[in-house]
Length: 303
Image (cartoon, rainbow, N blue to C red; front, side):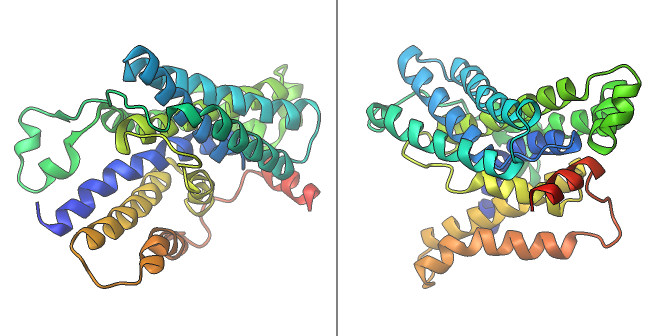
């Protein structure tokens, strides 16, 4: 593959690391709760997956444990916000700092260990399609799962009763309560499920994309995932596009480094974040979907 194709293929792979937590954050925000602790959920998932893979030799078991670890961290945030009425932004930051410290301590012994990573699969027939084959159909299984996850989340949100209740909770929780349902339960479940997806994103990073563990390895990806949801106007397709924009920018920086392009190293490191911010702002349609009303009220009350 040439450099352009390498950037696109790498963009799909690294963009998937953002896509999972961004879809999870979309679910939580649609229920009226923002989780700035998404970064912490990813860190917990990354370490749990890598440690499990190192001990058991199974990357797939690591992914499952990573999902559980992310969900546990998310449940802690949801409990503080929903049950204890804690400030959403402050709680998320506290959860992030806690996860950052715990993973740094618990992950020390795994820095030098190796695991068997998720296998790279070449989809028979499709992988040989000129240009698109190498870009879309030669990846680890979690990338292929993410292809189906985006339409699945869209269908759940807009075509099922569960999605209707979820969105109604994010807009008018008092109406949901009058209908006999429990908004608090819906919000806790949404944030926990979303955090579990963030845990998968962390697992994808440690046992799929990077195949290693080191302190603070998510490098701000969780915060990028939160930003992607905001600029994508709370729509699954926008989340997909935003995640891939970041992934392509990240992969492009690596490709430029590999080809010895004489660009300032700090600029290369900042490139993915700068491109993502400008591109998402440009793509955000004026007059598009607004934030869920309940989320807006919650964030307004914290200011």
